[in-house]
Length: 217
Length: 236
Image (cartoon, rainbow over all chains, first blue to last red; front, side, top):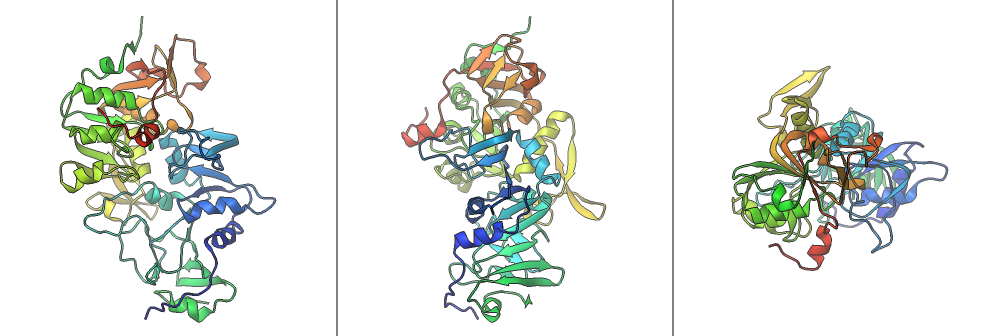
């Protein structure tokens, strides 16, 4: 049964901040669109991350003030960004050689569903009238060394996003290493979902109840 | 004497024929060769196959070419756009077909096409609907699918500057698909803000060597798609 009562978990900012704690100094990181982008706001003191955006920039910096952006300096979400000192521009084939060739250390993506084997679905509901659009997600999950998901634990209607097997079309198979939700941090292991950390004030049973597959402690 | 400079976008696209496959550079509006696309709309070629990462926004540039009914197929990674209903309508009515390709596979198919590689194996999309019907093979215990190189009759590309030999440099993230597309098309047409004499660009910084470029045209002050869209401009 789906438990509709909402728990007071981490906010989106707190989820992003929690994830940022786990990124080693000096990592090359690709952040997906949405909650993943927020991770850049919470770089722990003393660490430097270099951000890759697949449309051709290594060393992506923060968005400039509204109205001062350059339409030819954008990120993968087509938002105006800046280039840090030490940044590099390159073309798309090189950019995806960085991704597919295993040169990017970490990628953080949103999810519609993650299975207990680490399969990810995040590009299509499979609805017949939907316009299919995939972007770079399939290349990222196939090539980046570690792939983290950051997502609400359940959908807006209370359905679990962490499931035994995905019902939506897949982005990739056995590709997710770790999941950060509003309720917990969860690893994907050879034997399924394993709890790493609970959000303060949230009980294990409450997370298990909202997870569509067994959760190991 | 080599001089690849032509006088106008219209002259640069004059020989595009019905049924041609055309690569169009750009990621969103960055690097989208709006003036060349508008010249192609005026020129009239139809039944085109377009290879591009997106399908344009508003009713200018690539979206206007689609709206004009000139495109029968798009090969694309992300055809959904924030500001356009043009492609969704054409797709739903069946007037334009879509070959959906993961973005990195699209870039590599174009690079391979330009580099004389007919096909290659990639791990991207293994186990997903986009792998259906494709040859697969294991290397070192991992699954890969076979993807084919892409070539084109024409490429429309936006650069920042070029010399008359066709050596091109780009602006920031507007580089994106330009360099591989220049390699993969029989007739690569590049619009740039300024054309200089040979020697006017430091050979150490040239991104696309002139051998990959057939035609160069100067568009001194190119328009930006987002400005046209927010001003409600439609083309023609």
